[in-house]
Length: 427
Ligand SMILES: Cc1cc2nc3c(=O)[nH]c(=O)nc-3n(C[C@H](O)[C@H](O)[C@H](O)COP(=O)(O)OP(=O)(O)OC[C@H]3O[C@@H](n4cnc5c(N)ncnc54)[C@H](O)[C@@H]3O)c2cc1C
View 1: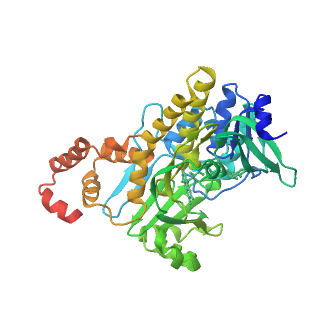
View 2: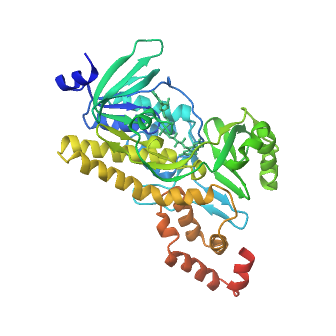
View 3: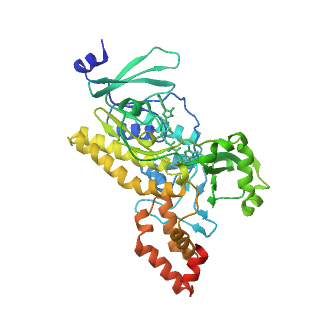
């Protein structure tokens, strides 16, 4: 029997088939199952499984883990808390604790993905999700315009068809679901950075630390086993010339910052240097007849501000709530899913613009440099800015004229007698 005929004659096997079982797919599946829906979660990987990504989970993402009852499990894996962010922009060092938003704390974590993703898959399984690992989706099956299921296979096995009310693409930036449904993209920008990282032991840095220099950024994230992930980023346009000398370029950047070079002198590199540089920036329409997108499949952005995991958690909650409203409360599909897109975009768009401003590592705009300088010694302003970076404070608040003028005014009151000279010095 063809898939289309089966759709017309039988109830779907699943409410949702979720393709991709990492930070977007596993929580989406878990939350749908907790709401009483029948969910199949598939991934071509077998977990525990690693992926290319550094690890910062901002306090907003940590709050999601806590809401889901999973934070204690993460802490039990020995992942160290990250209580301080320190961003050294060269013209100013902004160090403090991101301001808390309602319902979030101020602590971040940097779990290895091999640990975090496995923990999420296990939580989905416990919630009643049927999980198929090493199962690859080969085809998105439609009946007319509508997606009605997927065809896929276990490694070495025969293809099978799985029908669903909705097929959810949580399968990353090269999503097969997106390719099949051709969801329109908007707010697109090309890939801006390349990032390469390795794990180090013996590096005495216990905070999230970033050194921003012209055309280089060096990022340190404390993670499991008392190791520190050290990433060096450079503009995407340098990728071809640096591809054959990654280690040299990586170490040259580290050594260009004397403070960091001193700290790294006593550290030991535990792994080879890995990375990549092909992450474009784009938002995609995240739903259509019988399908939805979540995580990178629906919204890809440069990793410069480390938002991907926390965004995926937020969107897993928004999408699962929208689907549950539609299925359980009778809210029309179009209305529920339009809300999902509107809420996602409203929260993500300002951060996408901010990320794309920082990502090329060009000199910052003059007013931003002046603002950062003016923040020196003003801890509440620094914490608010770090909250903007961490996603706990809306960026519209951080860069609102009332806030920025207040910061400059307070700097003047604190003894900056000649703001014009300071502006010239900063710019
Ligand atoms: C260098 C780098 C550093 C980063 N650093 C950070 C950071 O510090 N903090 C942060 O929050 N984010 C960071 N990110 C971004 C973050 O890694 C991503 O946003 C996040 O992994 C997206 O999760 P996802 O679940 O949407 O997709 P993915 O993690 O890409 O997972 C997709 C899953 O789908 C599966 N899949 C794909 N196709 C199929 C198929 N046909 N059949 C079955 N399964 C399939 C894959 O096997 C995979 O497991 C970084 C990214 C990069 C590249």
